[in-house]
Image (cartoon, rainbow, N blue to C red; front, side, top):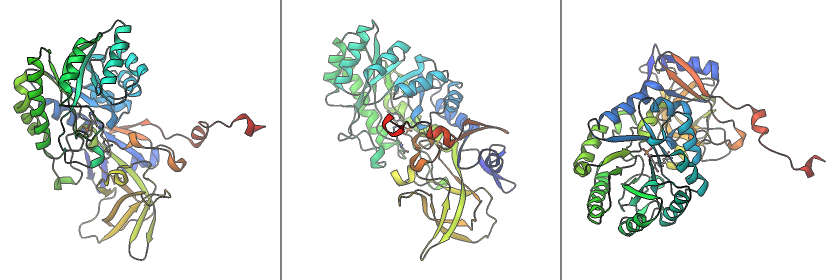
Length: 423
Ligand code: LLP
């Protein structure tokens, strides 16, 4: 469910016509809907009502301060993977006791900063990280509450670049080695064993892999408790998929996911932590682009748009499908043209969609690339010296720029000429 709908023939974000934003901000731009963000957070959190739950929005999906604060104001915590994300979460007002630090390569200064801040939990992904955290924490006279991220060797059946819970993936500690590493953690100074963490991948559209992983985690918790560890928290990660093709692919609703969670781990009486990213932000954002040219080749037609792979890399990186809708509603019976929708970047991989049937588009027409709220703006680059796309947030009938488009001067000022070139 999202709040991008046609009204009087024009696509709106909540109550704002996208044409109004385009006129003020220019294209391309990302546009986020507050009502959608809030709805997704609530649907997820409410599915666990009555259980001791901490929902830590996975900041990597969309780390704009306005997005984090919108969710934080509803009670969300934050799942962070770097000092930068931690600083964002704090700047957005997320209390440290609702922050969990994930990631496979945490560095000493990041760990020290997180300890200083007093975050809720470190999800430790390797023995060297455990030793480093112990050393830093004990040196600071602090105690770090930890979970080991276990790798349950479960196939998440998602795109190979976003699967994380197989033995061959770099993530976590093998579930076979975990009992030994927990024993080590228990004897280390500055470390307090608190829980078990698992995250098997992203954009999962089937509950079965989750169920397999959580069942494995449940028996591990019992084994760890029998060995004397005080396991009071379970972090079950993120990964719940979203519909990218309207009603044609409908992933399990949060209520079904919650029922499965309760079925597999409910009896353990742990605090349940979650790290949803895409499920909250994905369908709460779109990318609005402008048609530059319509070009008819030998055997296909191209729409060349002003958005490109540097702005939204998902189609070329993960073969991701994003629905694309004209901002001006297509009239019933209007003929369709099959287009390849491509950007201006000098790479064949610079496309948003191939063979997509749309009403005839002409230069200046606006298109909305849907489901771009997660892993869109955060994965953007300035390749081809294209300014980062601005981000706009809508709330009812209001909209505001939550990250402006940088000027070319600001971009060029980032570079420095060495002395030997300026003499
Ligand atoms: N927790 C951990 C430890 C993660 O690695 C991730 C995502 C999440 C939570 C959030 O997962 P979600 O609920 O969003 O599925 N750039 C890719 C997705 C990469 C996901 C990385 N980790 C894409 O555009 O599909």
